[in-house]
Structures are given as structure tokens and as C-alpha cells.
Length: 434
Image 1 (cartoon, rainbow, N blue to C red):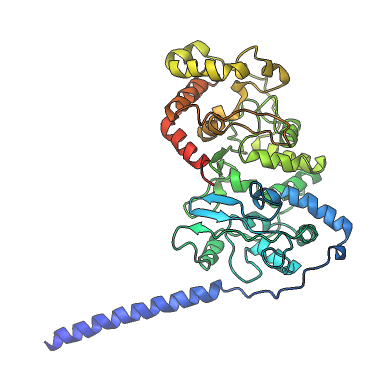
Image 2 (image 1 turned 180 degrees about the horizontal axis):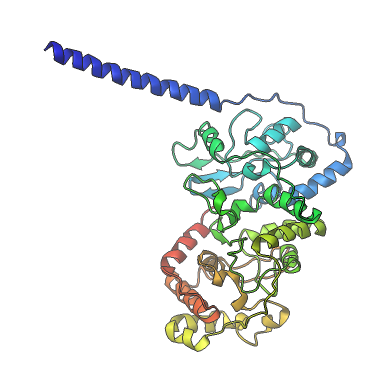
């Protein structure tokens, strides 16, 4: 009996010790995650900022796509409230206007810089990485101060963002401190002395404000970019962002000139048209100095292998073989698509790219091809540019899959996509999310 009592006391001692150690660990983690608040300021007068700094900040804000994420459909520019769907739930973007109650009117420049580079709000709360501070942490303070000057000279809008809807317990913001330890890598983008000034400018913009890797790099289960697979392709708002490295699936290698045209107009006759989340990016880049876009293009093209040196190969068109294998897809294409995409169609004489050049049909992942058929393509620049209606209401998942199977077989030499109906169903569901 004495031995049993001693064993029981020993067991409870170990349980108590483990509980105390767990509690101590939790308190230490909370202490490490704590960040102090930065004192509020009176909203600065717009006239307190140098006009040249404000103009520069406007350009930098376009390069960073600030308004794209911080403006909801039908809402006031930069007033926030746009839903951002993630695998962990829905986040709503913050109000970036200088309203003192619902925006950043009481934020100092130091508070703004901390948010952009460390993902911490003025109050000390950790911010979710939907704000791509993984990339903004590389931006120079002078550029962040210029963006701050631009934002603080906008008209204040009193509009609070809705509450985030996240999977439990991800609403507990101190957890983000651990995420940052793993995935936030501060420091400026290094300058490569062996490269041109244009290339280095492009590296600074792409790795920093442009945060191109945020969409074009795959992410792990925790939502962090897989740095060893930088620019190998990723998912953005339910669309597939293609690889921007040597694995880019374009039928013809990108040149700097072709990419500049694409980034400023939304279309390249030798490649494809901008669709999905890329449309607003094109709209922003169409409004910045061309030299900035040329720098971006120079850097990205170097990652994809540079300008072509080999002769251009003939483009495939296996119409008969594809029709035999996908008869339903061939019929649907003839009725719904050939009027624009078929040989001799009027649109094809207007510089629109052939389907055999479409990157989405050559990608290993059919997600963007499915989204293009379901949602269509909207003109990216104020009603100008490529446009295609969506067929989500006209075609079933099986019918969309039949069309995609036919297009892949007809216009590429790549193997069939697997499980197409399931991919289409998933794309339809994600396209319907807020």
C-alpha cells in the first residue's frame, strides 16, 4: 500500500511539473510575441508633405498594388474591406485612408514602417501575412515614407473593415510571432554588381514592393513561401500563377519587350492575355513610368532563361485527333468558342494570341484554364484590352472539363490533365467565394 501511494504521488508530481512547464512555456511565448504600441499622432496636414514625395509615393503604391487589395468592389479607393480568401479562412483588408477612427490617420511614419516591414500594427497587434510583409520587409525606408506621404494626403474615409473569419485558433494573433520566426526574413535585396542597374532595380521591385513571389511561389501547409522553389508557380485567389523560372510553360520564350507589352497592356500576341488576379496588376503597371516596368521585365526574363536563341517551332493543332478523343468537347468548342478562337475568326486578325500559345493550356495545373472558361476574362485597363465571357452559368463541370480536355489535346503536345471534372468543380467553388 505504501508503495502504491508513493507511486501515485510520484505520478501526480510529474503531471504537475509538466503542467507548470507548459504554462511557463506559454507565458514565455506570449512574452516573446509581445510588441509595444506606438503612440498615436494627430493626423498630419496634407500640406506637410513635399509634393514630389507624394507623387513618388503614388507611383510606389501602384507598384505595390496597394489599392488592389485595399479597395472592395464598389467601395472607396483604399478604404479596405475587400475579402481575401485563404486556406485558413477569410481576411478583410484594412482601411488605408487617413481617417483617425477606422483608418491610419493616427499612425506615425514609424508605425507605418513597422507594419510594412515587421507585420505589426500601431497598437502592437501582429498582422496577418495577407499583407505581404514577407516582401515589403525588403523595401527601403525612404520608399515606405513616400508611400506613407501619399496615403496621408488621400481623402479620409470612415469605414471599418468587417471582422475576419478564420479557422480556430488562428484568430489568436500572438501565434503569428512564431510564423514570422519561420518565414519572415528581413534585410534589403542585395545588389548584384555583375548585373546592370536596370536588372538590379527590377530585382528590388520584384522581390520587394511588387511581391511577385507572393503569388508565383508555392506555399507550405503553414502558408509560408517555399524559398527553395521560388517562382515555381503558385495559387492566387483560386487561379494558378504560372512559374516565372525556367519551368515557365510558355510555347515561346519570353523576351523583355514581349513582357513589357504584356505587363502594360494585358496581352502579348506571342503568349497570352492577362486574366484573374493578373488583370488588376496590369492596370496598376499601365500607370507607372515605363522604365519601372522594363526593369521588372528584365529581372523576370532573366529568371525564365532570357531571350530565345533557337528557331521558333511550329505550333500544334491536332484538331482531328482531339475531336475523336473528346467529341463532346469538340462540339461545345464549335458552338461556344470557335466564333472567336477558330481559324479565320475576326478576333484572330486583331493581334489576339492563338490558343496554341496560351500558357494556361500548357501548364501542368489546369486551374487557370478552368477559371478562364468559368469566369471569363475582363479587360484589365479601364475597359480596354482582352475580354471573354464566362460560361459558369451555361456549362456544367463535366462540359467544361470536356472542352478543356479537347483544347489541351488539340493545341498542345502535353499529356492529358487528370481528374479534370474535380478540378473544375473546385475552381467553380473558389470562384464563387467572396
